[in-house]
Amino acid sequence: MKKYLLALVLLVALGAGVGYFIYNKPFQDMNSAKADITLTAPELFTAFESDENAANEKYLDKVVQVSGTVKEVSTGDDGNISITLDSGSEMFGVICQLDNLTEQPRKDFKEGEQLTLKGVCTGMLMDVVLVRCVVV
Image (cartoon, rainbow, N blue to C red; front, side, top):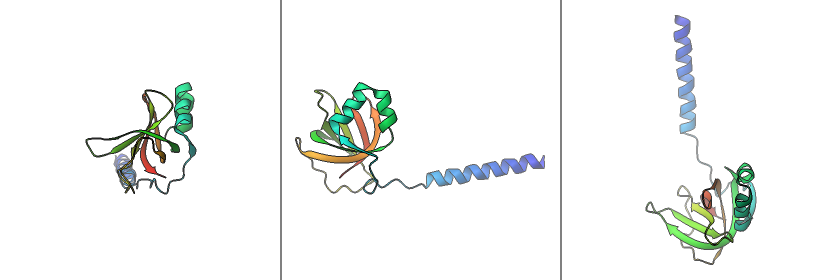
């Protein structure tokens, strides 16, 4: 009986230690993060449009640096800024959601402006989505 109780206590202590470590793990600083892949917005969108499974394997959860022309800028109810880069498609684009954990040097973007952003790729819904983006 004592062995089971000791094993249970050790298991709970191990679980608590892992939970504490994960809870206190710092976020990756996107300004200093090295881009895993660098490409243009039309190239990224075409990769997902032509073969989404292959694109997911290549880009999903990676830091991607993407360049393109600003198609639209929107601010959500929570104040987060999303920039849509032109992908060459009439209806869809590459949405880059600015990182609210990082101090952004600027928050005013104009349609038609050339821009390079870096963020984590979360895949394609209708648009390709990058989160935690910063301006490069």
